[in-house]
Image (cartoon, rainbow, N blue to C red; front, side, top):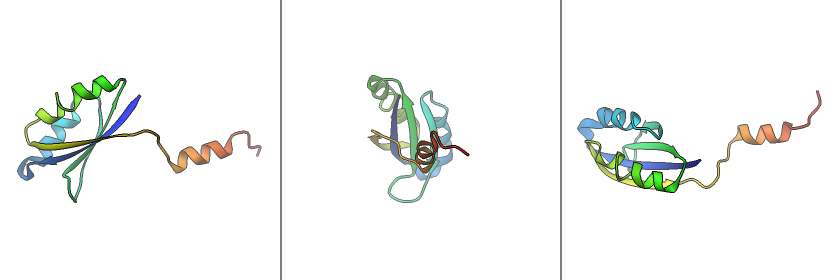
Length: 93
């Protein structure tokens, strides 16, 4: 599974509608509105790199209100939950 984060600049007057339209696209896991240099951050999960090529320019970029996208592909995930689980393997209570 390939995880990518798509940073999106959107037209200010249509951010809620744009975010919902993006959230409704297959492969989109989450959409966050945020402050800063971008208006929306979207997490996508797909099976193949070719799916990213179809999803981002083919669907997300074509949603009304999307002005620009910047995609970042994740290599590895780190979280405290994963670390805690790894250290508890084989632990006896």
